[in-house]
Length: 413
Image (cartoon, rainbow, N blue to C red; front, top):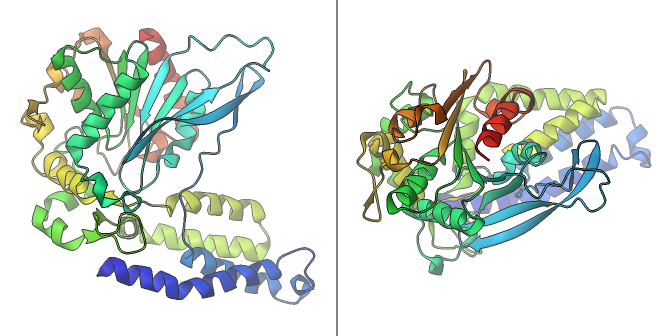
């Protein structure tokens, strides 16, 4: 019922939202005579703030059409390499035909970036992908909004997530592949590679794990506490809802994106209120550069997706409540997940010193679990002064983290 009420409210507000958008443009357009009226900019700022608070935020585009390599502009095409009901495997293909004197990129290592299925779209890793493309062939998991998946496609749980990762690795080929998992997927990625190793399949050359809950018992954060202070039945009864008409997935049980978004905001409401107030002041002053930065950030931050209920509840129980991976008790479709079976895959873990989502030690725990990997093929890096997002996006990622990741991949390429 909550989902239906949310959709009804959106429908009722939409005419006022569009009206506010139109008025904001009328009062700021250079060719509009209304822009010269006294107080026009302040009134326009009010309209735009209302518009941005009330508008729908669609999934953003990656928008990576070219990159600079050795001083040359190299075109990039986004290609759908494999399509599954709940995920698309995307490849960012670099074209070098028009880049004179550039080194041949055909032998660059291949990287599979496993994006989190935890509310935001994979485009949150745009900076990660753009940076990696300088020296690597890059694939990424682009998870599908569950409300867009018809019910006839069946359920999607954590076991299915693991199976998807295995299939993607096989599709790309493990020979020169390096897997980077960001946040939540460190757990299913470790499971997938463990199972492949136990069966005697080829595994990737290396796996790089960034800010993930391999063992949430280490330095629990507020996120971890939230998952453990209530029984699983509470989550099932309070945050799981049915997708309403007219979405293709109507009737599917999901953890709705709008509830996840409310949770994100509730973690730091003062910061978001201050950010919107600063945005309003920037519009009034005519500081278009800072205002545009606000728009870009919240266009990404406010775009959320629905998670399949089975997957969300599996993750709460298996990862955050019963700690089955670090306890050695996790079975995926009848096979025991045993990271000690991994032999021929180097391991790098990365943590942010100030990470308030995956506490320090949670990602690093993978080294103890992967006891079959030779000691010299283990590496850990703690990023000083970095929070959760700083380890894979922004200046710290580009200047501190990426050079170490590039060096680690090159060592095992």
